[in-house]
Length: 306
Image (cartoon, rainbow, N blue to C red; front, top):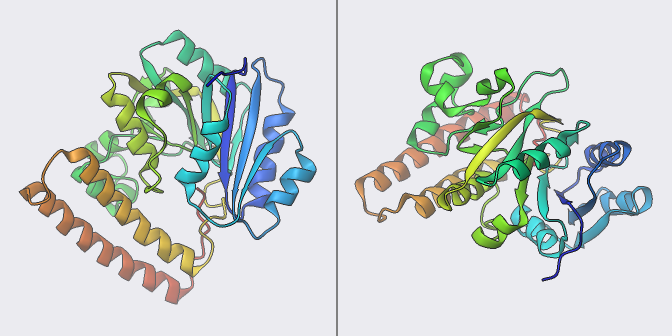
């Protein structure tokens, strides 16, 4: 396929997040950039007028409208296949790019031919850092990952620091990490041509799977601390309501199973795989019970971002 001279193709898949997406696009087009870029928005069957808003307010955006929710991976892949940039930037609908972010990510990749992708350091609106650089998922992640009560209660323990690696950004130097968040991730087109598109079976663990496949090519995955993006976590709109939160619980554990089976290299009946299945089942039951308790108490009304 013949590519144009476009430097970066920004890919945004969205579902019922009109307000967050409008802020996202405003930040992109309000900031002068030294690089040429195009923006693709794939509306995954939104019912809140997202597609009309994009068409009216941002006519320069290349808009794809799905008649129904086909899934995050499928939507991103549709745009990636049509995009013309030499670099592909996966961007969540609830992320606001800060000035210079894309230039810094692109400059880093151009200067580091061994790098397979580079991710932004994600921050909250108050400037505090989010867990946007992590170790690749293992059994340890279940106990010391970002969703673990151990990590929430004892965030500075040794094993949590091994899992959640954003603390390494303090000195401002780019560092290798297992995977960076797909909320703001820049990857060369040539890498995608080699490893393939996003795994459409995955919602959660999609970025982990993508970065694992990059590592498997012998390239490295980096977080670039001075390329910062504001992540309006829980504002994306794709999981509002009880049905969506229940869906998220199921899809998270399904994704963990798919990721493990895909990358473990072990037979299903291997003791470690059986242990993993047992652990996932127990975790699902425990998480489901906690979710039900929160719903009944009326304290779990979040709307998670993609």
